[in-house]
Length: 223
Image 1 (tube, rainbow, N blue to C red):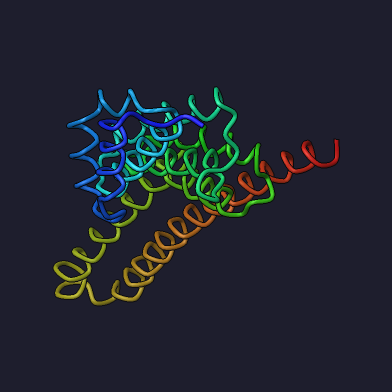
Image 2: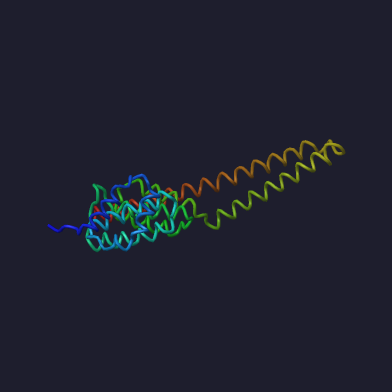
């Protein structure tokens, strides 16, 4: 059995004495004594590094968190770690990395990480739902054109309303009904185009995420 030297044992003990929810305290301690922490045995070093990485996520340090996630994933693969603290640490790290990328609005990168996670755990609905959400945030060109069309229709409707109020109603009463009909048609068309575009995008994203998960499930379990 290997025992840590007294000063390294004291360092690890002091780190573990910090409350697990004191994320700022964990970050300060780790960054202050990072070189000494690196000198710990692997189990102690990994324990400290995993806690530090999690603290970065919970304090919104998403850029640093992504970097540390890559380091953790490398350690997990190199040392063949299946679980840590009763959790699938590989899946957890991948998921939180995707969450940090999502928070930084790096949606294509987050999508890539989530697809890798779905490949490994295709029966888990959580990463699949997250993948769907990530796809939703990536607005394709056709959706932006649809939104542009809705803005154009709103402006056209506003112009028709202005004409109705300031020209037709005071001076051309015979045209009131046709102009009101045109106004209502434009407003209805505007709402219809907007709803159709958003709903189509949402359904496409749900289908894409579900189809990918199903494909990975079949590849993994029915090959």
